[in-house]
Image (tube, rainbow, N blue to C red; front, top):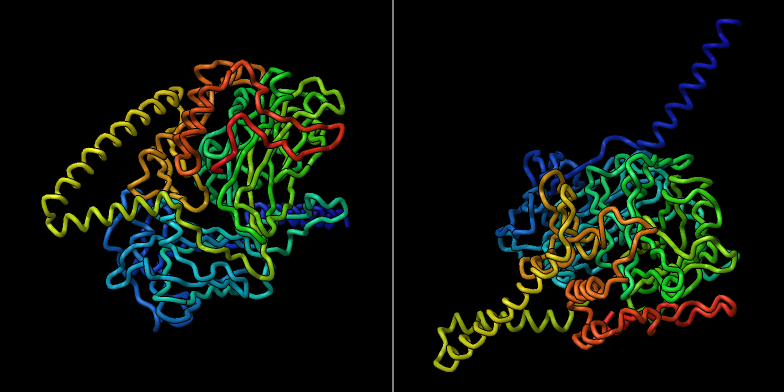
Length: 587
């Protein structure tokens, strides 16, 4: 008996330990398929993509094809330059472990593949009865988002079978896919509060979700190779989303501050998410007069969305030092958020999940705003945030939204290019030649203006020595390049729009790379403040107007409460909480 007891204790301990390992690294090795490839190949990160053919239930209605042109935004040929073409309904049978959640990624590069032009390709994708894409056009989507390629990511609910069936169904022309990833994922979703409903919660354990945004607030781009766990997620900086004339300040934890996950699994988010944050600054009167706001575009209506907010206060040590209200789409998600009150100490991580509806009439923008709460008389009037993830929730076994609309400005630009090319091909009469010369001169002048603006924005956005040189996509997840190391990360945008957007968005941090919550905010300096507004304007050329810029630049920087409406906490009126110095028209 004396011998058996230690053995039993050892076996019990080993069981608990192994279960813990399984939770942190669930499932088998990731399945990474280069669709249409004949041999295994490595991408720019050194990851191996294996051929997909053996996972097809029937390959008779499929062909493999090579793209005729490699867009400069593609830093790696793998997996984008090869494609699997489907001319009829075809199913992949991917091995899975029963009762295991999986992350599924689909990669699309709309190009010309032999006689198949992706401009005429419309198709649907269904995974075990869940519609992921419906009448989907990768070409229209990439054009609308000004990207060369896109990636769609889904968090699939556990199955009671040993294979995941992914079916591609052409609705017009043909269907295609360039790459597929299937990664075993931990159970990362539980109950979440439904915003606007005090007595209802959402159960995320059995739900299918689509990743819409994954953002490192106040920090820099985090590549898949630097993600935590085995999920190889990409985290983008928040430059393209922070909104308004008051941008707050970015903060970074000192090197001697330990980030403590405590009871939270590290795979929830990498440590770099919790080592940086964005807060409002040190000036009470200014902070009480505005909301620290982010706007996320291209959100489909008629769906519910899970908004996950990541928090870690690496400065303060006591509860009720900073308390703030969280608003999502003009509704109160959390009346009194106290990060230290939640975590119990400095440098301890946590997150909160909220579910919000995008009902009929939703304009496609999801708003997130923070505002200091005065109710408990905290020591400081401030707010902070470290990271954001936004997931679309399935609605009636459907996750598919419509193809995005191409903006009038982009459509006009494309029409002018086609007209110009047509004139060149015709040889041009004298009148046409004059038009061509005039157009070329105008184009050269426009290019000079844009180049000057890019240089100005670049000078404003120089990083500290040794900082990361990544540039980012204005729409995460859809333009994920999976590159790391010394290579810069390109957003996946088409060649026509890469340069301006990269220059406007390349700066991963507002203010000093070591700004403190207690340090002076950029917005206190009129010169820096106006430069910030210029950077915002030119990184969102398709969203704003010149009149907005003129009004923003002429705003008195010392009158920080001008056109800013804070929440009336006594009445609970939140009808105007998103009013900012920068007008919302065009967003």
